[in-house]
Image 1: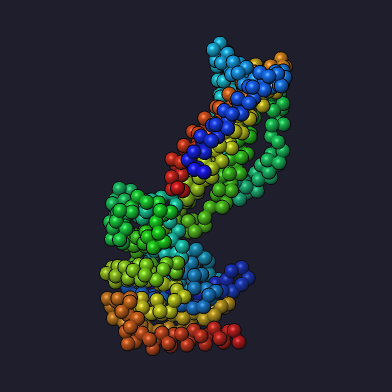
Image 2: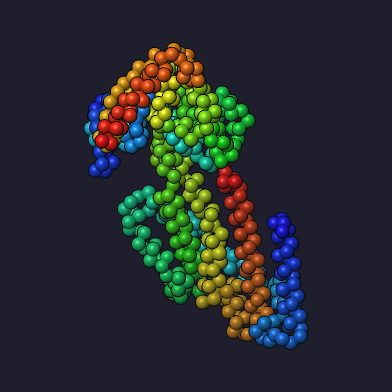
Length: 248
Length: 250
């Protein structure tokens, strides 16, 4: 369980977030959507400890080592092979090098990268690099994964495949996820709960939407579920109203 | 034009140039006092090796250059890394290094002769100062400009200062150093030869000075060719090292 309570963040003198509260229950997939500049990424950075909040609380019963983070950029070490990058996550968790490498190979194969273990990041496609980054996080068997628009740079087909793989693994292992995304459809297709962040500065959580789609979930079929379109419409209307009000 | 045959075209052009030069010298168009024929330069070079007189000089220059290069790499790396990672040290060291970088450091050669004598010490010191300042800035910039996303990646994976040094800063700095290693090798030889030129009893710089005082242009050109050949061989070695260690760059 992760609970963010009345969190306020600023970049220097510029306020970003003000009083953001949300909850990620154990084993649930939660998304955070909102306009650009509303502080979505900053909120994730505060949770993982990369940014100091002005006020508010971040409470979790999950140990720091059990929280994984997937960035917008894959941020793989360019001088390490795919296998070494995945193993790095385990080695930094205290796993012996030999065991880490063996586990890394398994994860690379599991994520459809068989035969690419020895390749350097520059020798991989965008989708393959993203899978390596995902393997790096999943290999550590985290209880919670924070994702900052990790699939934004991928084309539609690769994105659908990678997200489906992610959902399958997250459901199988009961991992909690907090995903930040611009994409309302993606948020609804993947999540159990979606939070809407208002337009910044001084952004706040302005809505919470429970997604009643069944699990295990097919992320493509979810989009044609009867409950999907009305929920998307509602979320879209609320987001438009929020952006419109601030612009006015 | 095929890029693969570039070396062939370059070789043909070089041979043609040597041929024209030799022909002009034979025809008496060139004063041998200033511009000796290539065959005379080759003969001077051959004599240096045939008589065995070159070896102590080569050993002296190589020892000074490689000694200065090694010490410069170690000290430059240590100072650059410390300055980049410790703000107070950076604040104190950066102005000194900027000042040292602003002047042509070979002007320190006479001072080093006073401090360290006319032996190998003053030549190593000059090579060292030339290399160390270059490597200091290489490492300092390498660490300061390291990709922040990689740092955050390792931090979010639970890596501390040691892991950051090992996994991010170290490889990043090695890439920067290898990128500048050819320049450092050139600097190291410049330091050694200039140092020998100022005051020495042996070394290629000393031989150059001797050739100049005896108006022996053939010997001078032979020595220049020799230095170029050895430095190019070292460039080849550093290039090989770069390709091997920076394979990830492609």
